[in-house]
Length: 255
Image 1 (cartoon, rainbow, N blue to C red):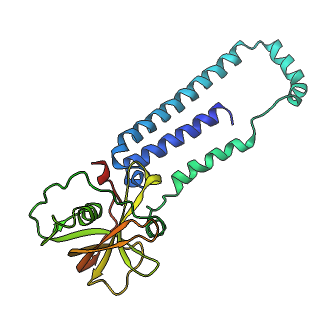
Image 2 (image 1 turned 30 degrees about the vertical axis):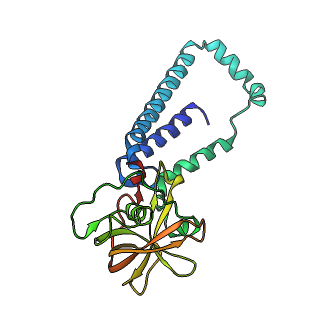
Image 3 (image 1 turned 45 degrees about the vertical axis):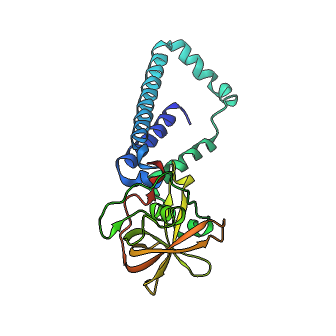
């Protein structure tokens, strides 16, 4: 792999980052706030690739112009001998292209029920409980509802009808959960926050299917079998399928 090949790989990587940053694809990897940095990284890689290609092209031209015909002929005569002592770059270096092709050709799905059922709930106690609007039903995030239900004991939720959206996960005992993966920085640190569902639940639930549920607070709290963390419940009055959101992760921890 020579410098021109390296510049080609850098260019493709920068183009892939720009493509991901300009679409919703980057949300599969990092939080939304990192989009400007991702775009800037793509630009830097492309500029570096073009500069490397230009420098290598100029260096090659200077070398050919300075070489005298006699020296060139002598070099040709000695080529077989020198070739025996040359040390080309190992071909294994081209394996570096495989992660690049994976980034370009394969768009991984967001973390779903498989990760949620094998990871304990990551619910954290909120620093504060902001006042809720008088909207009815009240749209809430899964993380917001869970924090208020467990640590505020539902005081701000009493008498309110709430509406939540998340994907379905089924516990080992068949308990249905509404889940959102909470994100700090990137998908590698995403952790589930789970809400148990009771009441008027659809008879057939498919893991990873997205649902919008309407219901009321219930004091019921279970313990997560993975890490013994608290899992609040919601008394469901209505449930309907929901489209997969553009950003499948919950970033409320960063607000």
